[in-house]
Image 1 (cartoon, rainbow, N blue to C red):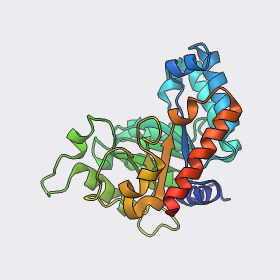
Image 2: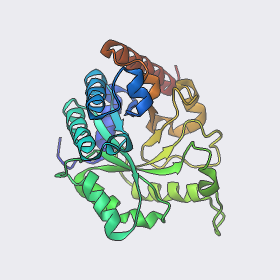
Image 3: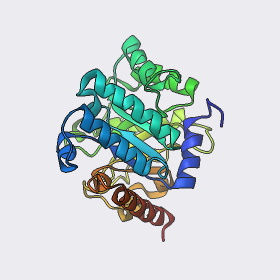
Image 4: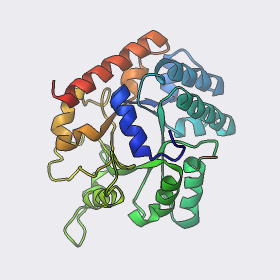
Length: 281
């Protein structure tokens, strides 16, 4: 595999080989407590290493939530660096859930932190926010292309506050979300077998029939499991784009810890159900 092989190609292969499942690593205080761990750096490290041991050799994608590591300062970020390294060594792709978004040199700095191949936190893809204007993401798009990485751009999120921005109608009659999706389709034009620039589209947002989700890129879909969506819901929500959906499950898997066997069993059950739903069986 070339060091700069595009993220989309690597993701397509991982989804085909391991199934289209992303498991989140979200070590928030209540989950650490539920695992019998202290809400400190030691608890954070034990949690993260247990999840990586349990699932990183069998899922396509692992998605650490950066905020839950950053809250512990430099020692927490060091744990995040090790989590990224160990996850990628086990064969899973890392999507860093950091939702960065800014302009100019600041956006370039965020891109250097997560998308440059020599950075300690280099990830296969990064979640980003386009709400300073899609063009503000240009430094991240450029660096992702250079380093074989990808982006997941917030488009149709499942939080209740999202629609006031994402469903707003522009002067040309298109919604903001539709505009973001159109930009992604342009980024991915001609890419095979899959583009590297995807959208975040919640599995719980309801009827998406008015949106063209066929952007020739992946669709990261939070909301499966504890938030209420099921694998069986995916075809109805995503339509003809369902084959490019990467459903994210966090609490639905993590609540089974700290037992490694239980974490693996939950992961494998979600993977089986998602495969069956996507295949229409």
